[in-house]
Image (cartoon, rainbow, N blue to C red):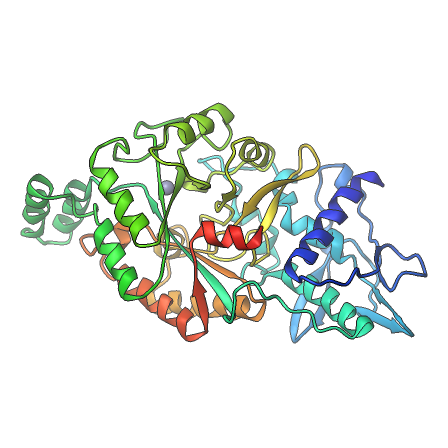
Length: 441
Ligand SMILES: [Zn+2]
């Protein structure tokens, strides 16, 4: 019983944080025949066994015109029953929300890819076709609906001033010194024999074509948006995996950092490969970072559900933005707002705010991942933005600096700008990770 207590409190606390209200709602997890809002408990035995719920037992019900899955319950009633002044939610939305949000599936399924990552192919999001639906937000909407009806309230998510949702734009900086060789090779392969000379010339007499921070700041100034730049401190490979191609201690980065900060944008960490499961390595990287940072995203989106939340909690950082699928856009935790990471190993919430990653350039067009043509990328962005707007959520985008340069695989910059414009038209606010974290906290 106690096992489920931390988990249900974690979910209900998150609900209260998002729908701020002065009223103390009388919500009970379980049927007690007296509380105003009662949520039926399903069969959650499996939380003790580090196993998966049965997918064959998933019940699909319609909510606000969308088919939503419910776990841990074999009954098939209406979603909410109202009786006099009480409401009963007939499905275990608490355990279902916890299951998806905490990343329990990554805890229960041990298979990993060559980089040590949980595979999108193994995910329940892919198997149940939920990747583009923030299911946990729908569960919260059910609870909000029950409360509104019983208390005569009209709870709203008012986190983003007068805007409908927030956009968190970030740039992981993996490579900013090797356009002269990588892009030259790409140009030669495509039959362009002049461009490589220009790139090498630029490298020698100016900066590498991927050292394009001023250009990115200019694009974002024209768009009147801010963003977060994630830098790696480690230029040597670790665990056989490549890290940054630059040395962050190099003098020329102090001008870059100062320009980013002057523009109102943010500098954060890009934890090197193998720092996600090594507490002292992560701490060393934070200590050797040239300035104080509060946010992080792990390189390769490496994330170990058993150890990373605890390591982050002990790191002194305030937020992380790693939780997204490398192979696909969409909602890895089935949620489109910030939330606190849950430490499953120690069965307790952490104080680390997670800003889940939803849309990354390299997931979209890379062969073996989604491999989408440009028009399909825009369609997908629109579909996700529609869901996020509906739930007053957060759209989190990662666009690498070299995809905002035209020297290799051009066209990415235009896609980026087009997506920004769609968000603006849909009444979005643009904030850095730090500002979103401050609002959420
Ligand atoms: Zn990276």
